[in-house]
Image (cartoon, rainbow, N blue to C red; front, side, top):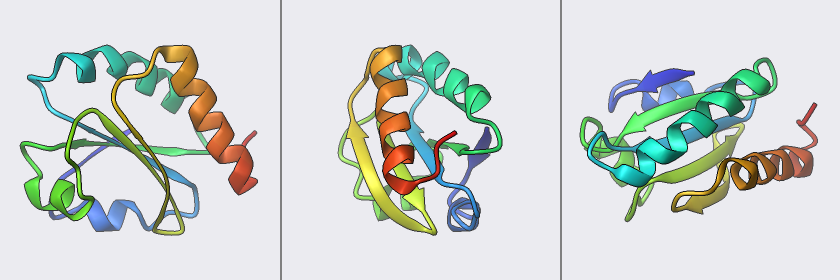
Length: 110
């Protein structure tokens, strides 16, 4: 799992692996609730998925380029293109199921 900034955001999408971007902010309660599930997903799918944390407050240009209107927002990219988006907090099992489903559609799951 890596942190992205306005300067590094586009480069983190240049990955052979699918990339899950977690757009969050430290003051956001639902973001803090989702964080452990995102970290677990990063660990569980290491080598099959790259997970990027994007603090919306610290990276307003990057979050703006994604059209973020609410947080937490999870955005999945494949070959630099957005392929799926989930706005709002999901329970851990639902988040895992969503990620696994997107990866399966991409043919990139384990």
